[in-house]
Image 1 (tube, rainbow, N blue to C red):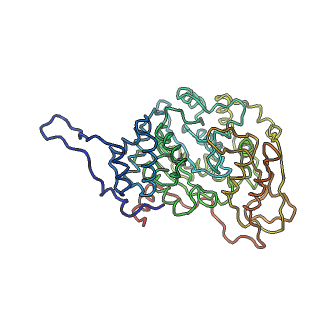
Image 2 (cartoon, rainbow, N blue to C red):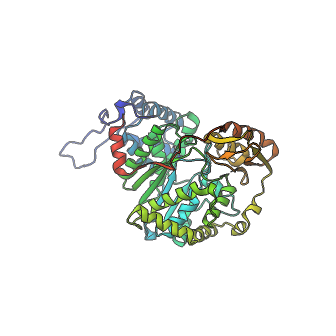
Image 3 (spheres, protein in one colour):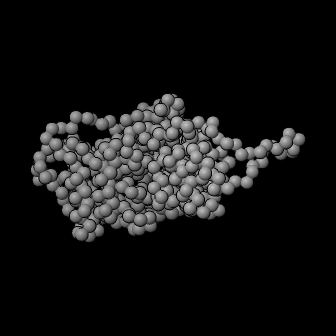
Length: 483
Ligand code: URA
C-alpha cells in the first residue's frame, strides 16, 4: 500500500504545457491536446501526471467523455504504480470540482463533519452530529450506504419510517438552519466523477489504493464546503485496510491533502478489533444510539459512548467552540447528559420526515422475520473477534447488500451479548441473530462461530480505543519519513 519510491515526489512529471511566447497577451499556459490513451501509458510506465492531465481524467469521468474501459485501465495502472502526493491532491480537487457544491457559509456558523472509513456497529454519527450541533457548530453530513462488510449510515436512518435521505441542497440547508445538523445522501450532481470512478473501482478490483481512496473520500467531504473535518480511520480486524501501516499511511495522506485544500483536519486511528457497541445492523443500531443519548449506560456501549465524545470533542475544538480538546470533550459530555443532543437528533429526524413515534418503544418496533440465539460452545474468554467476518454475517442476515441498489432489511442484524475479553460459560448467550427468514440464519451463524475465538485464559493485549492521532504536523512528519 505504501507508494513505490519512484513516485513519492513529482520530479518525474513530464510537463505538457507549452508556454506562450513572452509577447503574447495570455498569462495562462496553453495546453497541447490530451488523449486518454497517453495518460494510461504514462501511468502504466510509472510516470506522474500533471494537474492538468488529472483534471482531464476527472472531468472525462464526470461528463462521460472518456469511456469506462479507458478509465478502468487508468485506474488499474494507478492502483499498481501508485499516485504521488501531488497527483493525489490534484485528483481530490478535480473530483471535488466535477459537479455541484454545497456552501454552508450562509448559515453563519463553522461547518464541521466527521468521516469514518467504515466499521461494524459504527453508529457514532447519530451521536456526534447532534452533540457537535448542540455545541455551536453546523454539521452538514453527507453519508453513504452499506459497503461490503461495513454498515451504511443512510440504510440505518431509513429504518425510521418516513425518514428522507435524498434531500435537495435547498432542503439540506433548511434542515441545517433549523437543527444545526442534517444527515443525507449524495445528490446525483455532487461529485459525479466519484460516482463513476467508485463504481468502476468496485467492479475492477481497484478500490484499495491510498491515493484513490483519499481522493474519493475527500472530494465528497470538500464539496460540502467544510471548514474542519475529523477523520475516524479504523484499524484492526474489522478495518477496511487490514495492516496497521496501511491505515497510518491513509490517515496521514487524508490529513495533508485536506489541509492543503484549506480544511482543518485531524485523523484518529481507532480500534475496530471488535464491533463498536453491542448492536450491528440497521434499526437495532438506532436503538443503541438513542439508549446512550437517553443516559442508559450499559457496559457494552461504553466504547461507543467514549468514541462519540472524543470525536465530537475534536469537532467542537476544530470548529472553534472550545480552546482545547479537553474542553471540547467536556462540552460534548454536557450536551449528552443534559439531553440537548437527543433533542436535536429528534428535531433532525422530524425535519427530514421521520416518524418519531417509533422511539416511544424502540424494542417493540423491532420485528425481525426470524431470530436465533447463539450460545457459547465451551467455557472460556473471548480472545479475539474477526470483526470483518462478523460484518459479513450482519450483511448476510439481510442488513447489507450483495449488489448496489438491492433493498436491505431494516430489522436484520446482531446483538452481541459479550465483548472481547469477557469470560463466558458454556451455554451462555453470545449473540442474537436477526434475519428476514429462518433460511437466512444458518450461514451467518456459521460465520459467527468461526469469527469468535474462545481461549482458556484472558487475552494478553489490551487494545486502546484511540491508537494514534494525526494532526497536520504529525501527518507531514509521517509522510516525510515514510519508507
Ligand atoms: N469510501 C469512499 O467513499 N471511497 C473509497 O474509496 C473508500 C471508502
